[in-house]
Image (cartoon, rainbow, N blue to C red; front, side, top):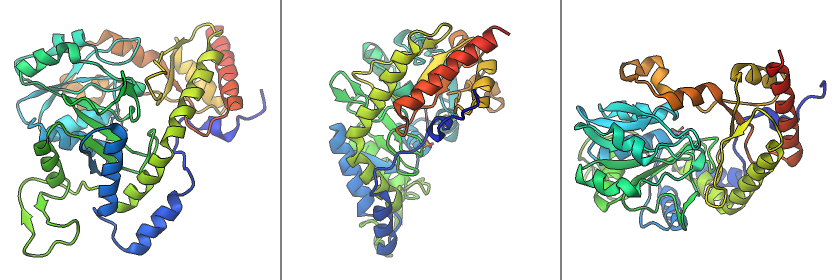
Length: 378
Ligand SMILES: *Cc1c(COP(=O)(O)O)cnc(C)c1O
């Protein structure tokens, strides 16, 4: 047991560079314009084409995407937003940022996602929006309740931070005109800009609101070439634009993305096959024909012991995520969520990124088997 893990199994997640990112950054640096430029706009168009949608609005992060999407949908104080507790805290913070109240909802243990029924059970008179989280890349299909939600004026805003590239039927996530979709292009997402995010709006009006909000509410006639005649502060806004430096990285990443999809699928299938013979592990399944896997997660009992044992073997395990309703910041909105609480105590994310080799995966799974035996048997 003395051989240390290869460096790539030590990392739980990380970016994958396709080789031309550095040149692209240098070109922007030397060009001297780092704000919202035509490079940002080219990235928006390329993402829209890739997804098969008419428009995409780039912002500084996935968190900014969620925040501006809520603003564009008109969600504000006094209203409730249904959100799974099983998500990264950014989803919840975005709700608080618009002055609304999170209403935590439970998940299906098999997918770690919300279901139609769980959402409908959580609807109240105050519900203004529901934010499904496309956990691990899995599309969340609320079409069966879309009409009921429409009748009540409830907006669906997807947190698709994990799900760039995933398909629902034949269409990419983002192509459903009934919902606002938010992507993150942060450092460990399927596609990275370093930092970045994107909103797929439902309407041109939503797109306009987000475009204004991301540039401090200032309406400019031409990118950064504002002058006193074109400068008008037209509404609320923040410094939320996607910089040209980040957009340039994203453009290179998008060129490599079809290879990334295949790699992530193959890695996930390699894990699935290697994990199959193990006792005491439940793989959280993914429909790998449609989903671009973002994580490889299992459930184990004695998670704390297994986690510590694997870390001592230099395996980069993680937990996505400790539930939000038990966090101090969100204690005011705590409610009992049995499946979320069970998942919160059992989930374990195995190293999953595009630098992994089959040998790394073999090593991770062998270590997991040994950890389960030593923890379970002690
Ligand atoms: C990463 C992530 C976010 C936030 O995106 P950032 O780009 O880090 O701001 C939101 N929700 C989920 C589920 C995420 O994984």
